[in-house]
Image (cartoon, rainbow, N blue to C red; front, side, top):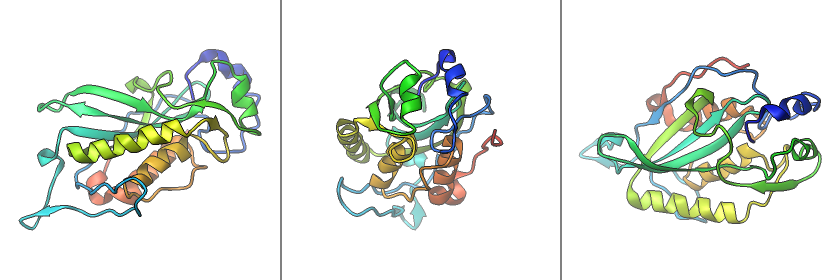
Length: 221
């Protein structure tokens, strides 16, 4: 979903009975949390599993992990919230030096596809949308550190998912569903796709991160 004030008047007329990628009223406090347990990433197409890698009896932490990451994120907007992922590389100091966005949203700057998409599938895009990288609009996030080999597997799956994701539909194939597929390919459990974006990412973090994924999430709008 994209951030556009021109869509607000039309979006307010939609009978919003679905919760996936549902509207969020205002900008809330930012939320960032990290998964400090390394997870093994499954090969694309293999049954999902999550296992903590241990060394000398201790869980390997993000400080000893590779400088690659994927972040499951949700954001607020004037009309609709959005769920998506940011993935890339950091330098040794922890600063992001490259990043890319993947998320499912209607392929248009018009409000019409958003209205129609509540009833029928509409053409979709799977890249960055307005506001995705603006921290002022972030409502929740969960960052997972990856080794280079794990990262390459995740990126390969994202590329494949993007290549076969052509339509958006609010109740069946929304932004939560797209993001959830990426999470499941990594072996994570996922919540229902009809949650609000903030709730979806927060629940995803709680279901998989345990005590090492503690963070603050702003109150629901």
